[in-house]
Length: 86
Image 1 (cartoon, rainbow, N blue to C red):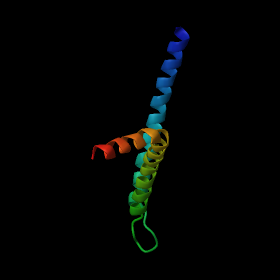
Image 2: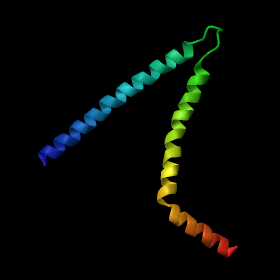
Image 3: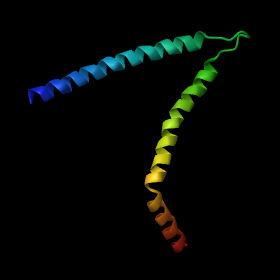
């Protein structure tokens, strides 16, 4: 019991340490993105924002494909039932 409590407390401390590092990196990236310009004076933050949106969308796309693979039979039967009603 004591060993399990020690593992859980170490895990919680570890997660808090990781969270603090991630928060610090976000502010650093924001400062660099706000001050960065290319050779023509254009801000590069638009490209960074597009990259963030791309990275955010990929996991949802993969989860959607995974759900389609695993629930393919249920989706087919639902569509057939829906067509037979109408």
